[in-house]
Image (tube, rainbow, N blue to C red):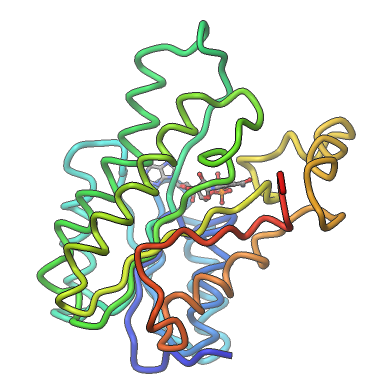
Length: 248
Ligand code: NAD
């Protein structure tokens, strides 16, 4: 179990799904966690309460990351809580939309890139002054960036962009000892992948996996905590597949 005691962490989109599980895993490892949300205030407060009940430190902050000034607003709110010291950023918030090439609208395309690519880019930019030397940034990619699964061309392209950002951020920030990695989950049982809860969706998912069960948010959170920890001190610029052996 990695230790993150004394560390401060921001997890975006932490009111539910993978972000929630990641916030809980970081708190369990001892980090003070900022639980970011956009609309799920009640759910975010429930995550904060769960962490505090176990003796941890957490606060909820809201920001809409689809807007151009969302990342800056979130960075400012973060500073108000942690001051000048952030050790861990998990840029998890994301949106997806299944659509064929023909049916993808410009509006959907722009929203996908705004939340999944622009927001993490500018959040890192805005947090650079308080990200400590030796800190860890984890972005969230996807199996869809590496394999043509589902009908997700625009979404998948956003995750391909995330993988590219990881390499450039890692190269640029390595001199400060800041590590930058991504996690690429396979299909995980969250609101985003609700298709996997249908019989057809479940058999499609298990059909491409080596391990024969549906991935859970709790399969991802501890991996993010590992990447954030000193145990992963020699890993940077990489995207780690966490997908039960999908599309091998
Ligand atoms: P989810 O829909 O449960 O969670 C998405 C989170 O992003 C929510 O907390 C939501 O509030 C936040 N978010 C969405 N739009 C936002 C906005 N405009 N401003 C601020 N926050 C916003 O889905 P999830 O599965 O937990 O997704 C988390 C991450 O994992 C995403 O980046 C997603 O692309 C990625 N992912 C998910 C799967 C999967 O199968 N579930 C697979 C691969 C990658």
